Length: 127
Image 1 (cartoon, helix red, strand yellow):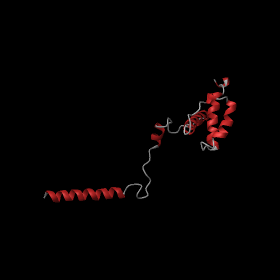
Image 2 (cartoon, helix red, strand yellow):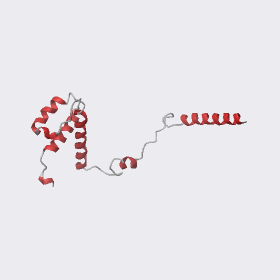
Image 3 (cartoon, one colour):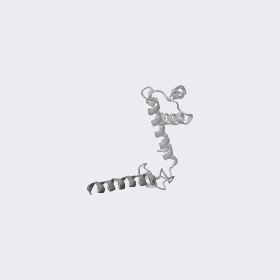
């Protein structure tokens, strides 16, 4: 009696597993359950419906430039601080190092924009 009950239970569990796996979204061409728009915005400092201002987009681009500088340069050596060189020297440095770091033109521009933002004095008209 106990063995037949155990067999039925195991058989039911196996059948349910097969049915569950067979109905998984990835297995039957249904769209997977993705995080909601609200979840994305809660985890990316943005509210649904927010529009990025030019200033916010520039800040994001500068953060990406800094991250690229730190990540790509540090693959071979310590990432340089922008203040290690005068601004005038950075274009030559980037020209020689960008191919070694496998940087696209856009990524190089992002890094140069970041370096420029660090080394250029703030425009007093923007205060």
